[in-house]
Length: 375
Image (cartoon, rainbow, N blue to C red; front, side):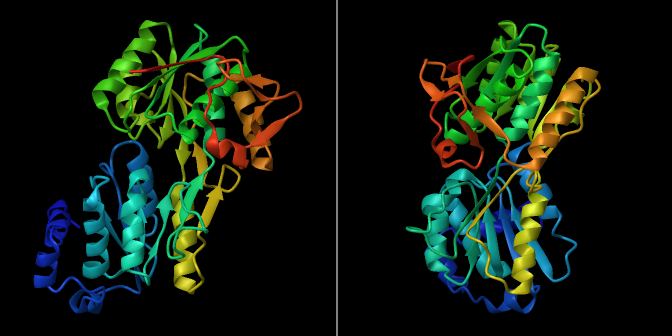
């Protein structure tokens, strides 16, 4: 589907009057239904599908469905977290006959996806994130996500072996629990190699701010950080800026090794193909779709980028051994004795939290050794 048509489909529903004039107000638009596949699945991205990051990871997952008999995939990229996404969802239902929609960005959920759930109770919506609650949200909605903090821990293991300055850098978007867990996991992985390693974090304030991401990366390299990672929508700017300054990089969301082949150590990647195929298998079989879906490395929801040429033998051995432990299940990144960077005890001696622990879903601290600041 061309960008031109995707733009036009949003324009078709720009106002309710226009929609009514075109006969689009009903969920049973007859012309599109006549040509619909057995099931049509819609994907909506907040940025470009080739961003080397969050959106690309989802698009790669969507692409894995395109060879499945009876499944038609429709996609739209660069859709803002505004009423525009409601228009996109409505047009996917009315024009394409979509019966399952994945609005992938965090801000799509409330109020936008919830409004469409109420308007189209026979359509299934699944959101990437942890926001669905059975006590207050409709049953044709749901959420899916992965435990990727363990991937950032493995990033940290390799970073800890590689760093000469013992200073790491982390470019982050917003201090929400998942981001804080990734920062903490990255440093704790590095500290399993050398407990004296520190990590500076700079929050840019938004998921995609290329100028601030470049400024943050340069600032950390200027202050001695020699391995950089991030949690922003597209790591492209961070990876290219860091590598251009001579620092090593660990990736996030997708594989960024083509951007810096000599400096890329490894990366924590989403494997959304596994998740989307699970949903589509249920859709084809007529099985009710789960409302709450979670998984980690052992479940195939998360994977690691191949180790790069700069990774030494000691790093490879610890990486492989740690990954093997994680694949057994029950691995704890947050374990005591552990304090926050403000001195509060967050885990006592012998206390450990698996990444599935409810306590980590409301994480509001950075661990000791993280130096935090805002851009």
